[in-house]
Length: 201
Image (cartoon, rainbow, N blue to C red; front, side):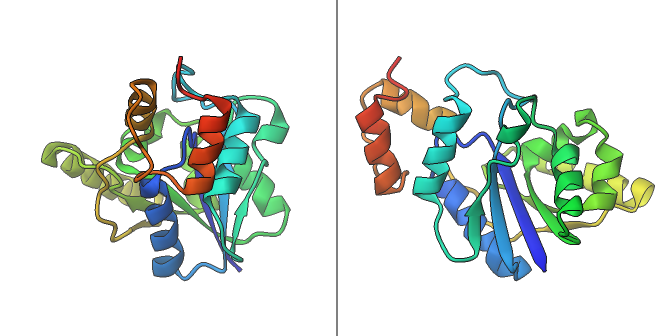
């Protein structure tokens, strides 16, 4: 089985996340896609990020499809979310062929990840430019990928995905300012956010 994993903070899930997920499934011909909200993201400040249980609900409302599963695998560990731990746990569960979706910013910080070299032996990394980045940032990411492939035998695939023009932090800012973000969020998720009054503080 070809398993794709797509992790992140997802606070909130927006159209960029949805497009990335669908493109990931289609281009890699995945048998299953697992959406994994981070419990305590080690690389991101907690400012404006909803509690894990609420972000899990947002993911369940936003992502759908028979071959897509929203997993609480990292939340059950009750500690910081490290990708290498998740991959090892999935391997123990019997998933042999794992593909992991990363963005440009994640590639740039990859060497700061816990046991990052081990990740290359556990999964194929799939790289997507989810947001618009300066040309030099994209070039730096491409050079780093070449280095990982040469130095560690990493398997890294480039996803053909047009960059999106919105981010979760931008959506949080818009909601706080009373702006309409319905064009960027699935209706069920947006209705839940409004009902709960999220991102207004």
